[in-house]
Length: 95
Image (cartoon, rainbow, N blue to C red; front, side, top):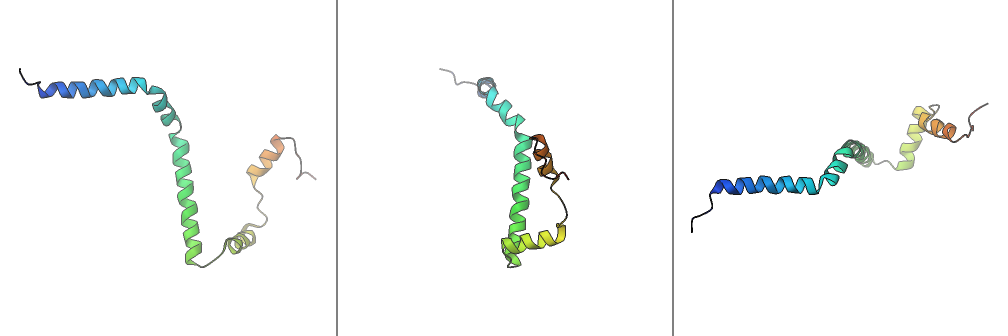
């Protein structure tokens, strides 16, 4: 019997990958569509962890950090919170 030429293995690999992509196209599509969200979440988690490590280095607690933030930005209103209240018809902040 003759040995199978090595180039056939290359074609078999590409065919297998193609069939796998066809069979799993829904998962690939979901992964592609959620990639942006996942990257944003990862970036946010990295920012939170860096801030937390900074607090640990400075030997501060979360309430101390909160108090400093309130002192720094005390009169700043969370616009996202206001939008969500108005979206549901609540008018807590109107005069």
